[in-house]
Length: 461
Image (tube, rainbow, N blue to C red):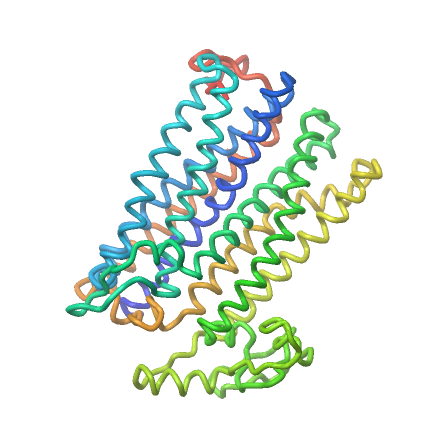
């Protein structure tokens, strides 16, 4: 393996692992804030205990996300120094704002929330978790501003072999981020909703602590259903935008080799990238044109034509991404989203009829569906990033021009193995802690520093 391939693998593994924690942080912070707000408005101690319980799981997830996110930033200087040199003035600006504003705001008020239960007024304490939730989602915005420049460069000029910012406001209003941000945040809401519904379903199956988990389930069900429908709607609009701005990515996502008008949608396909064809396809006529243009007429350009156009514009080379992985990742994301929507709708029907708790198979389906949003999130990230191949900054810098020239394949392989093993260990610890406290359920916690009856020292959360 060469240094470029290893650097891509390392960043991919790090990013996938980090992104396991980000969506849950975005959504669970909102749910905890809603629970505590209901407690402040009603004085119902059940909601206070719910906020403490789900807040503890939020903290475990948040800690893992911070640790893995810090490591990512070192990649830009170590493995991708030429990328940092080329777009550092642009890429660094939103990341700096994210760290100085959003992350510090998030960390400060999270500390106040953890230790302020008996020291702050209920309303002020609830305001702290709302500020944590706001800062978490604001942090996502700044990071996606940086990522959107890689997808759709705006507000820059090329000078002395570097991209320099000319319009910061253009970065903030990048059309790509206007679709990507709500899609990502709503996916986080879905992740948190099914996380809460799944754990609540576990306790409803066991007939334990029914009242707090019934209420938790109801709040999460409302969030999950609304968010999953909105994710699908925003995703559709984002797909239409990509047809115009990144047609190669969408052609790969559909394994469309030849331009067509109207263009069919392939449900399944056996992709033969070497011969640039699909050996087996099950297609729905004209559906791709409809999804792209809201009309059953309209040309969708194929990979062959796009490759020829790219070679003419940018010079000789292969501009077609790995089609089969992008194609199947796109379908995995869509299938997962459809499953979550259908499960939400059926759960709402059973809940309104008062039948949910008498349907153990549905409760088990909710429990075992906790990983489904994570699969959808990972698949969506894969389509967004791998579908941009061979560009690291679309149309401006290719991957081979972005990698660090002085870092050997051996050095990258060593750190790749070390970080993968470390992250594997952290994953085991994370799952163990989440499962442990999820099974424990909603319990009263002693003040900080005092001994729990079980002999453990616990934070007052």
